[in-house]
Image 1: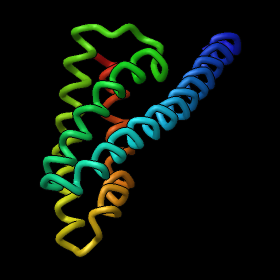
Image 2: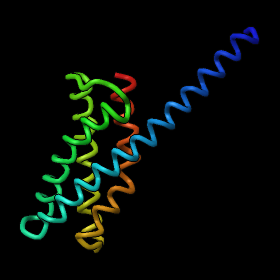
Image 3: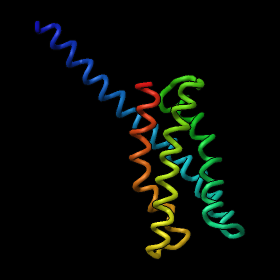
Length: 138
């Protein structure tokens, strides 16, 4: 490989790392906003209804905001049927992880207020990988 091609390949690699880092930062901003929406809705509703139902309602409502913000802000893409279906599929997997971990942490004795925060520590990195795949590979 010539030196010119080698430099070009290296610059593409750096650009991809820089783009990925920017996506990660924007993902964190969107994720924090979505998690705040989810937690606020859950926290309010869990006083009156079953915690799993409250958690699910919060998740679904935050999902809608999350999809729009992820497409337009994080990955700078248009919302399409294809990425909407992929995002929904990724979030279905993520929701399953959320609800299993949520109930596991409740079973371990974490309070209803702290269990969702413990879930986020595990589910957020997993979700980044899934959602990035949807917007970059599909």
